[in-house]
Image 1 (cartoon, helix red, strand yellow):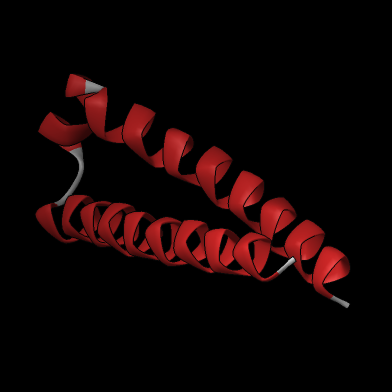
Image 2: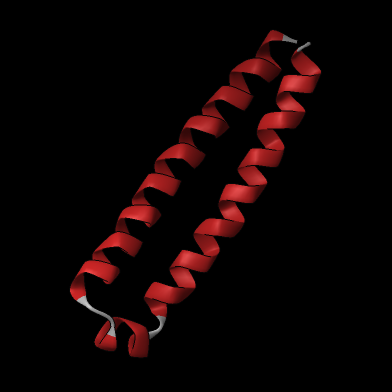
Length: 69
């Protein structure tokens, strides 16, 4: 069912966007970046880039599903 798949992907997209906002806030906190070990900061940056890639893929998938309707 295309509608169910669109709804599922939109929920996942919403979740990922919230997660990404949290990561961005953490990285925007100068105190965190200045005092956290470099490995921790690098891990957060990796989470940010991974989330952005997943969000882009989901948006593309949702668009193609909507085009199929």
